[in-house]
Image (cartoon, rainbow over all chains, first blue to last red; front, side, top):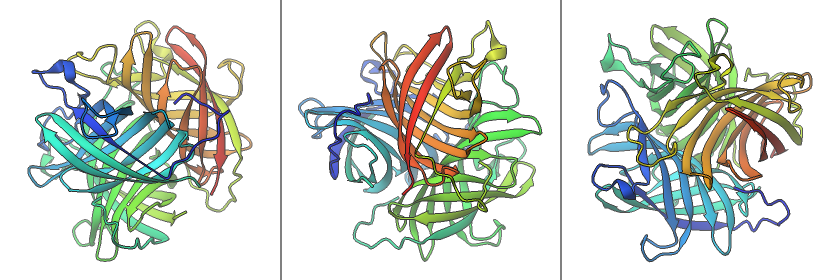
Length: 162
Length: 162
Length: 162
């Protein structure tokens, strides 16, 4: 985030957004927002364990990428660190939300275990900059929809600033 | 971690566990818990510098994987970012401990420099969820034992919740 | 960081350093401090999107690697998660500064979006150990100079300890 020390941070106590993640495949590479960059050489552990995916996803205020307002970008990485078909897919999720709306500008930094098949799961807000300067908090994640390789995920975030 | 907003977090001021990490090799792939997924193409920097290892390790309340109580999973990644044979092996350690005991349920998120050959080293707790909601703290790591490709490491963790 | 529970942390409210990062190339491998370890197989997304670079950079108190005082090492990873030629290069920056001066000893852990072409940008301090025990804060990053594959970057860091 571009630093803006001259302005007083706005420090909202909550924010939410939808993140739109489309995994790279061969049929629609022009709409990719996430790409696999590493994985095990010998796939002994099965099912994608160890894969690292880098993403640059649009963030919107509603669930539709076409008609909702863009509020920023989610940029970072997820790493499959537990997989078991139909039972569990966990990823370590590390990313920055670069928020840019009329109201708020700044970044929120996230880290946590994304238990992908759980209806709802929590990760940590570990820091923030700009209008979110010194934020900490909890993001509750729910999967809004899955359409082929496109995942739309809702983040509801509670923030504190001490 | 599955979110559980309806319950009051228990917020313990300390927790400890042993983490059991077995690096993938060709002789016992069925017991692997950690796999190399990336590294430099040209090994100019020597000794494994740059390697990324993804892990899904059991956490126990005592040092024995066979007889101690399982208290959760450690899931994440370590990245060798400094190596010098016999002198120094540092890794950036990023992982979530998914704790599930009778007493506590939740996740603790860790980040820090694991100075592997030091008898004791500290990393940061950067967040927590569930019973560890909003945790921060320090984890002191000591290597309990090394047996071939299996490392047993003790984490003693002090936690605060403001 | 080697743990040092017996001493009282010094907890400075600010610290700054220059970080010296030299990307691996074929003409001067002996001075490399950063190496690419992963990236997309199909470079559909162009311009290095998805590349992961692991680094072990010297930290100095002034801009000259030759004549400034060494104050520690910056060890970690950056991940290109947004690229557009001449317009934007963002990286997720995750690293530990292992500070060792006469005055302070400890680690500071950083996470944030490094908007590389911005004259100034902020990332989060998400934790600290040793003399920086329990630190949080903001690091304002400015690019001091670029010379071929060598980047010298100034970190001005404000720290709090609650």
